[in-house]
Amino acid sequence: MHVLVTGGAGYIGSHTVLQLLQEGHQVSVLDNFSNSSPESIRRVIELSGLSVNLHKVDLLDEDLLKATLVSAKPDAVIHFAGLKAVGESVSQPLKYYRNNVTGTLNLLDAMGLAGCRTLVFSSSATVYGESVALPLVEATPRSATNPYGRTKLHIEEMLEELGASDERWSIANLRYFNPVGAHESGQIGEDPQGVPNNLMPYVAQVAIGRRDKVSVYGGDYQTPDGTGVRDYIHVEDLAAGHLAALDFLRKSVGVHVWNLGTGAGSSVLEVIDAFRRVSGQPVAYEIVDRRLGDVAESYANPEKARLELGWKAERGLEQMVEDMWRWQKQNPLGFEADHLLEPTDEEIVAYLGRE
Ligand code: NAD
Ligand code: UFG
Image 1 (cartoon, rainbow, N blue to C red):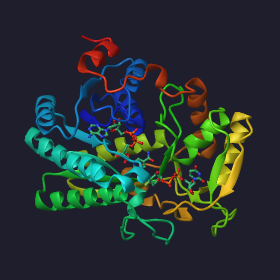
Image 2: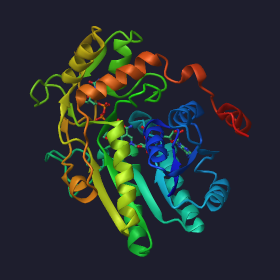
Image 3: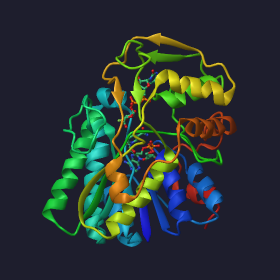
């Protein structure tokens, strides 16, 4: 199958592109490199020994987007492209609505024009808002606590309405829990720009000595050790979930939703302990005030995905941390050494060593 992957140069996208190639799919990547580097795709090509069609396109450039989709004629689209920093979405909400919601609208128009109506969308457990009934099932009522989360909610609703209006569409809304880890080679992984917002990359940077200590946001939650509990999921398991969803959509129309999580939660202190064990490094931390908007606990009921997709997460916390640590050690500054900021088309072609 020919799969076009928006945001394919990013963290989850690059791992998914590698698995698609390894499963024999033809892959086109579409990215504007606003939060990634073509270096990730160069490494995916190296790891797979296969080729990728890389298009530097912004979802907000409607004409170029349509022309790209019409000429690529993909069988399916996996849509990762989006902005994801919760704090930034609060200070710049319109940037998030424009990029994520308008960007998705443009993509849907372009897909319709190209005759491609199979879509896997990156949603998020953030659509469960401040829901406290655990574990979270797909039928849990949705809400949003910040503009980023609201973009995901709006897009899910938009896709449901599209599916209801035209039965030719096959759509999967995948609600990710907390993606972490890296490919086992240590060649691709998460490369946050600036100070990481998320726990795992922050802890990894403390372990490698780039930062002094982890601020643990809250030690007085109603959880076993008082710190926040999350359902961390290995990015390789998450990527596999996309292939399983694609397979399902091949045989079925309509709009579907699945949680992609492990079903088990780990606390902040358990994550820090796992990093200490795996890295052999001291990881200093300090318990500080709770972070605004955080819930005490969040974890999935992943049964629906197991029953309908035959998918379940295979890797535990120890392996997530081991793989993340290998990536961090091999790339202490992420892709930065080779980072091309806002590359031109010519630079990308030269970079990938292709005509
Ligand atoms: P990422 O930032 O690494 O990847 C997103 C990619 O999209 C980047 O390569 C970026 O350059 C590209 N992009 C952004 N806007 C674009 C635009 N207008 N046109 C073209 N390309 C554009 O993020 P990620 O962690 O890989 O996340 C992928 C998706 O999964 C996002 O939609 C995110 O909201 C969602 N998600 C992520 C998490 C998480 O914790 N990582 C959790 C739940 C959901
Ligand atoms: N935490 C700390 N210190 C830090 C960072 C985080 O103690 O420096 C704690 C948080 O309070 C929380 C846990 O670590 O208890 C996990 O926090 P993350 O920021 O790593 O992840 P979140 O669960 O807050 O949010 C992430 C993404 C959201 C997404 C959500 C569900 O950032 O975009 O997972 O998929 F919506």
